[in-house]
Image (cartoon, rainbow, N blue to C red):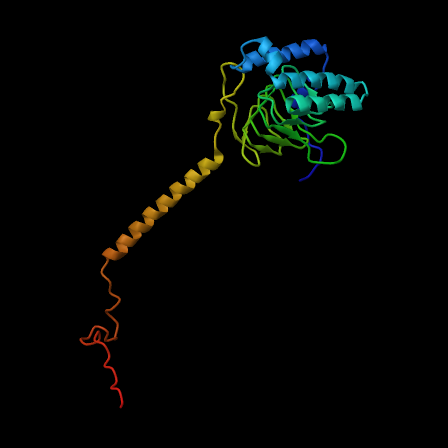
Length: 269
């Protein structure tokens, strides 16, 4: 897989620029907690969100580690990241840039690399990886735009851009850039649908994501059934047509006595 520098769409680049922290740590963390009430029906109070949501705790510790990282500290932010992973099972490198109102649902097994950039109002489900594909220094992790939703177990690899309002289906592996508003499914990920209109602003209807593999298999089964019907019709036509193959044959296979068994030679004493 090539590691050449990819072009980043202007919309995603602006989202990455907006993700740089310009406000206080407390105000950002408060917005992170409040957005959970908007996107998770299971959340019933801010007390519940603050105390038992590992995604909120992980992002709070990351914002602290990232602030120290920007000031030139290295070991301290990595130690905070290590402790955060031990407590929450969420591994976010302190160098990653994350925008406002970031939500990690369930917060289990999420990995965010050092040079990853995440816009505002992004939602990640458990098992998501924003990983790199190169050992060389520099940009090697994805850039996510605003209002991106990444399904459970999805992997987004390399310095690629995911446009605003894009959806990544569960367990997809994305290795190419994703346009704004697109839906990506499969391994490797492919764009299968444009953006759909939503009522609440966040498209979380994962059960409505198309299945391109299932559709291809269904088309193949339909084609096989059609070919079998054509073959059966052709065989029926051949069987119903009188055969004239024996008309010009000089063989005497039809003469009487041909079907009789050959006489056995007498046994000599």
